[in-house]
Image 1 (cartoon, rainbow, N blue to C red):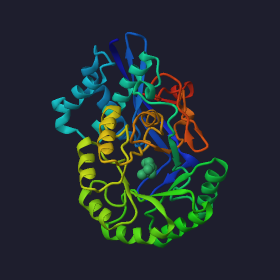
Image 2 (image 1 turned 180 degrees about the vertical axis):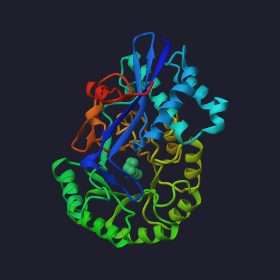
Image 3 (image 1 turned 45 degrees about the vertical axis):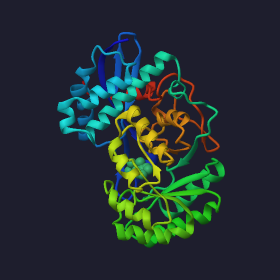
Length: 371
Ligand code: 0YR
Ligand code: MG
């Protein structure tokens, strides 16, 4: 099989109730800039990144994929995923300006599309190709009820519905709002509404200073929080290390970490407990696997951040030993050929061959082509 063409694709998916907010971001659409990789075998591989639908940035990602990486891939066999990843990752003029951020997002989408082709050619869902099993239990925790712009009433109604009607055993709420007392009051109200058995994760999206985080952690402690996510600035290894040393609440992070080596620094420093790589924001499946192996060697759980809305991560979780839990946000479900399925709070292993990001007819009608 040989790669004949890369086609950039841009999908914008509306988020829940017209717009969501966390402490740092506000968005109405989830951006999915991605690529279709065409082959002489007639198979097409699909991979998408995940963004806040900022058009100028999405166009840069797409440009990177097609103009910078594209020519390197033409004529290559997409099944040679590891070798191709090394070749793209090490390409000197790109490495010189990249290694994190937009070039990594572009590489991530391409790598997903290559693995998609490999799994499609093998006639297997990716989890099976990777050696996983559908018998494994992958628990979903739901993030889509805890947004900071929901009123307290909506927040509580959503959390109750997720637990009582939909069977989730774990959910995440956003903190880091302008009023710390309100953060704690919302957390207390959610704990009261869902009872003591449900796991509650919290996410400050990088908002606090170290002293603020130390104070907030002690105030959140009585409500039995599973983790505090991105308590302080995304890149601050030392700050998280100090917080981890003083805090009773485990720390989760990783959605803004772009490389294996940066994960190594956080993990080696003891600055993270729940490791949250994102296949769309690292250099794809290939680098995700490296990070998951690294975390596993430290016996740290890997709980991916779903920039792909779980479409690819579910496969990785059914396969990798460090993964037991996976975030759930539904914003791409409507647009995928084979959307993620949750039953009683657990992911159901997908059956279709591929890596899980093949768009459906409706998505093709909506998508913008930027050729
Ligand atoms: C929206 N999950 C997250 C979204 C969410 C972010 O800004 O990107 O809140 O992905 O932090 O853990
Ligand atoms: Mg987060």
